[in-house]
Picture 1 (cartoon, rainbow, N blue to C red):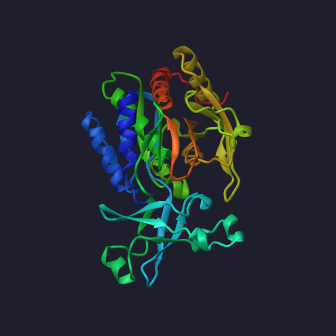
Picture 2 (cartoon, rainbow, N blue to C red):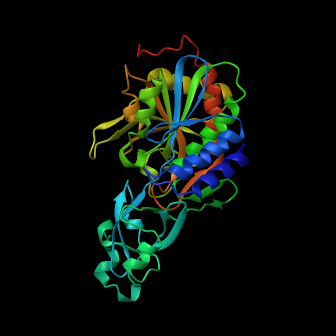
Picture 3 (cartoon, rainbow, N blue to C red):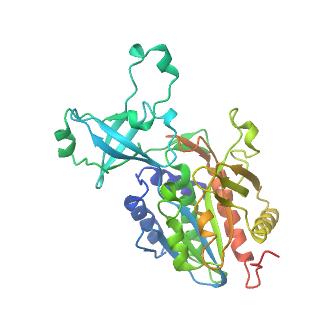
Length: 360
């Protein structure tokens, strides 16, 4: 399983898919599902959905396939590109980064300029420039040359695609958040393709999570699930700069969130349904899978809105430990992805027709 997860995650990180521009990622996932005999469909917003029939209560298991990045805001007369940030891009980590500007099915590569060190005044060396002051050098010498190559205002820009191994079991690359979750869903689909019983399950590869956190809501409004399980990163806290944030260890197994809240720009978060917490704890104990716990502020997923659909959805966030979130090189451990897959496949059969949906 680890080999398949590594291949799928590497493939997924090799395809740009800015929020609202997920077409190439969606096509890749659809092809991977089709290769194992799983049919899928898309809604008008672009969510990709694969459904497996079964009894109630129904389950929506989802991960977002989009990534954060930029939009071309202006093309300068000398061919440099100005950017508008899309999503929670860490501006202090941008200068010198390679980026890909998507023009249809092709990509034009460039570099977010970093002022020459020899000309940088002492005070500038410790200053973070906002995105509006940065520019991309893609090798053009004029606005006309950039436009002739197909670049227009509104073109999507992401960190340059590509992944590489770190040690034996870890992998680094752009958009581990949440292509790793998508790789897990693909592996779950392989297992469910041969299933003969269990709850109705809808696998959703959602869009625009990094933009407004509401792409998955469209799918939930259509599917009207009783239960929602969202797969995404869990903040790894095993590096020197994160040690006081929790006990989430890379390679320590999957995690579940007991509390998330985001107060910047929105008041929302998830306090998981107690029956879902019990389900995962009991599954982990029965299968011998270590289950880590997370409680964080500053974190928000689209489950925050999915949980409010209809009469309310029994919900929980689960995921994999990840380092260096929203940077050009995020890091996860493939063993955590494998254990997360096994946890999900162990939990689904435990969702029986009498599964408690009320908070009693």
